[in-house]
Image (cartoon, rainbow, N blue to C red; front, side, top):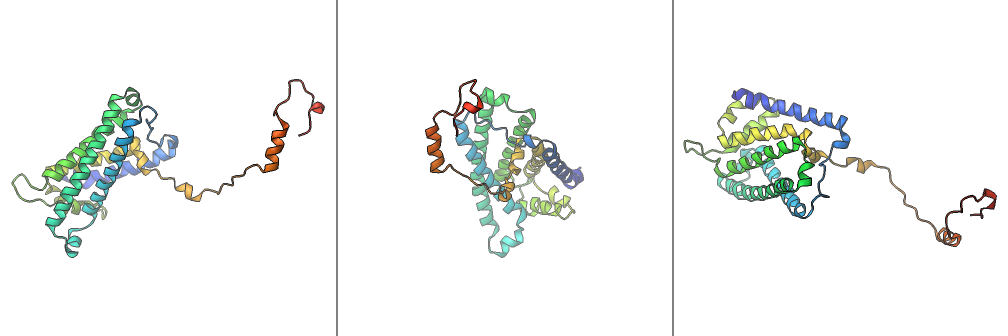
Length: 252
């Protein structure tokens, strides 16, 4: 079972993710959107949305550091495990709390505002549940995942991070992931399921970037010159009475 979960399932998720993005871009370009609900309610959204997105950015950067930078590198630059753990605990904890608050407000708004709730697709409703579980389990892993059930110290950079980097070499270290605590394992499984949902939900907007804007043809804006504006003013009305023959119309 562990071989499937940590050695096969991540690649199935990657296939669904990239295949789903290609399919949606190919056949549903006009649906590649968040289906914004700002017109229905904006007061709570103005506070909850920036809080959620900025906190999510901080959490994402924390994951990049924790998963992609090897422990040997931080040891080499003189950052010991205790200092790293304090930074991850307090920095990740504060970002996680902000993320939980922001997500909670967005879900509350979407559920209590009738128009917003009706505009939410079934896929997005499932996505919100998975997202809430992923965030919640991430907080649990951050706060309690440093100890195994037997009381031994657990360093995710020696288990989860090693497994994650091994995926890119197509040689997944299943054994390393098997030694991770259940909090991290549950968090990762929900996160993988959430990644597979992205192409089929409003989360697809995270991969929307107006790159074509950089290569668009330039636009020349022209305005009427002074003589044209004055002549237009002198002409008066811009229409002629019904039935006026062409040879009876004043010159323009």
